[in-house]
Image: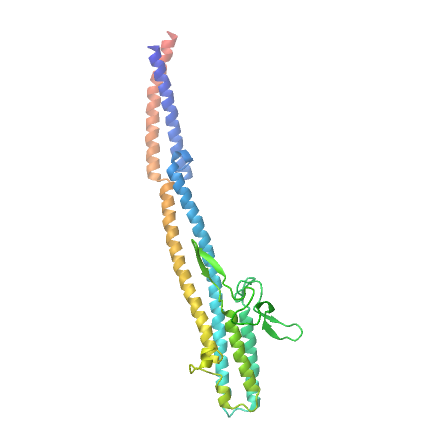
Length: 319
């Protein structure tokens, strides 16, 4: 009989210990908000949660990369828009200069403004985001144009070479950024040196024409272009240079659209991953509270029954 009572006592104490552990588990889940308190609680769930956390971390990294790409592309688009406006003003001035009623002095005044516009375009070619030059290819710490401190002459960076079609040492290379798993997007204008070089050629033609007292209105007007001539297609007229800028700007616009679509994709992915992670990790409070209350009731019942078992055993021991 005493052996049986001893077994009952041991069983009762073991069950009480288990009951304490279960109540402690529910209480800890309620206080932390997580049902994965330790790997042994749910090994499969812990593995899934770790996977979701890793993917969310990657998602955040790609979101940061997209923010960088957006800043780069938006600034590039703004700069090219300013270049277009500047060349449009040059177009207006040359249209005026092509009128044969203008005297040489009038054209010289126009040339002064045009040279200032060219300087502004050189400044735009050296646009930076922070310390990063946008139009210098992978040589982002180098300006596309440099000014000779002695003569004040502005020329392409010596490191870029002289061939505007094939600049050297990274000035014509793509700046790539990873926007998703193994998906790279080039965020710069790889043909920037060609574009600004062609614009410089147009300004050279303009300066020669406006400085020539014998130049006729027709001579000056030929620089305007817009007739789909060979010169237009070679971008050596004002309209041709504007078309080249617009072509590069359209390329930037396409990249901006892609970045926007990828941003939407990442936002949806983040929402899905967060929900999946929550389903695995987060406590359902109503269920947890119900389970805790139920476990407390079971525990009180166990204590009540156990108290009678212990009393009977002590009495038997005294006897």
